[in-house]
Amino acid sequence: MKDSARLFDFQEVNEDMVRRLFAAFDPKASITQVSPLTKGMSTSNYALRTDSGSKYVLRIYPANNDHSGIEAAAYQYAKAKIRTPEIFFFDDSKQIIPFSYLIMVFIEGSTLGDFIAENEGCPDHVVHRIGSSLALLHQTEYSHMALLDEHLQIAEQLESFASQYYTLLNGLAGTHIQPSTKEKCMQFLADHAALVERIEDKHVFSHGDFIFSNIMVTPSLEPCFIDYEYCFAAPVFYDIGKFFRTRTQIERYIGADTIAAFEEGYNRKAREPLPEGWYALSKLADISTMLHLINKPQIPDGWGSAIDGEIEKNLKLLAGEAGPLSDK
Image 1 (spheres, one colour):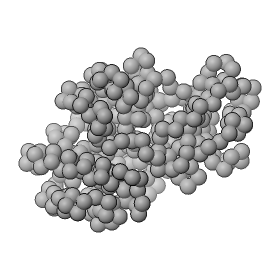
Image 2 (tube, rainbow, N blue to C red; image 1 turned 90 degrees about the horizontal axis):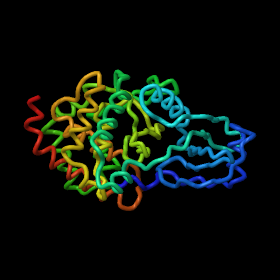
Image 3 (tube, helix red, strand yellow; image 1 turned 30 degrees about the horizontal axis):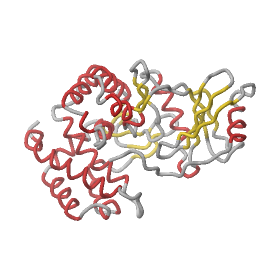
Image 4 (cartoon, rainbow, N blue to C red; image 1 turned 30 degrees about the vertical axis):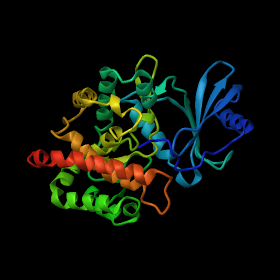
């Protein structure tokens, strides 16, 4: 499944408005170049260059999905642990423009997905670093699955991961996949309830959107992690499942060596090592995550069939692993 479709329309702002927004941060700087960055699902981002040669990103949040406060807090949390862009300015007053926005440093490099496609793979040491970085983010634990407030404390407890599957399959999400796929999911869950319980063993600070397009690979091959607006408290396997979700154009480059490098990196920094069968458990967790994407009356073209295919693939993997997993 591709990460390219947007959930919220790109917010067009003219260059005069960009200059006004930037002037609140640095009134003496002169903007010499403004370039829309149209990739992404929610925020509207612009690359800016000043007369000094410095480059920035202006990040504007959608009015009806404003996660700016929690993202600013998450960047503060993450920067003490892993490489993230430096945040220079944050304004949620909505006095200049009716949207919250922030200004951060521009990270030179490619998204992980583009890097893998261009290089026909990814060095193990980069994947190792990605796993280690995620483990460091996961070091903060929570009592249950929950939305977080702007202090990264629990704000609202969420439905348990185990029951989410049934809520989603019996709700709108279930109408966007094939009836046969829904039936297979229901049967698997009924037969392997213990596997879902294993997913809920521990809840941690979750990036929330740990996908290839939110990991930048710099020219020095350092991974840098962006876009924390959907962070929350979730099982360990939530982020891992999203990371290993199929990207059809580069899937052939994600093999056993990549999975092993990720595991080794994660376990090096984790409070507890990943359990045996972690990869299959992440695929089970990702079924619920994908169903959340289509749990609405209308979805972007192609999302239903893509998610249906990915769920089928995950169920086939799990069918082969369920016996050994159940005994652990």
